Image (cartoon, rainbow, N blue to C red; front, side):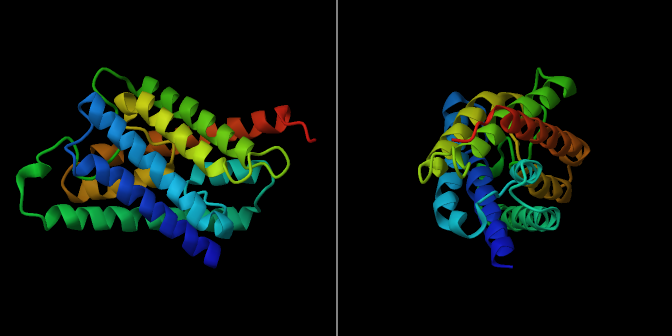
Length: 230
């Protein structure tokens, strides 16, 4: 149970810090805002990797859990519980952000986002958004599987490598989808976008669940095929 609670806390922190950086700094409309949000998500992963990594492995992402399941690092029942608690953590993080927004008496929240929900950005189609999420989740999960491999991995620096990779992915992908590569991170904010009166995030949520899972599945099989034990 401790592993599941750790995953819930870790995912809560990821949403709280990553989505919070977009909410309280008026969105991601400028290059500086994109870089700031990218760094926030990456640093949240680094912080949690060195906090709960020894307890649960710090997946804090159902796509990573799927990758670990396909590569045999985790069993089916445990993977399902990880995913449930990751989604719960994301909902808790989004609840805290929503309460902060609703209880703050200032006009700063007339911004691009009230919840940090993912969405197809102007100039991009459903197809390009879906493809981007598959590709960038593939890269992210491949890095996670490689750096955390028990024999071929990077050891303690793995958390830093994973966090830096997430920063790079956000820099490129935010202008396309706001960057998910994490179904739990998308589910929590989408719920509160609906509570706030907009159904767009929920309507498009399937993209940010299905595409990351496909990317993770592909990454797991690629890693299994290229990894050569020492």
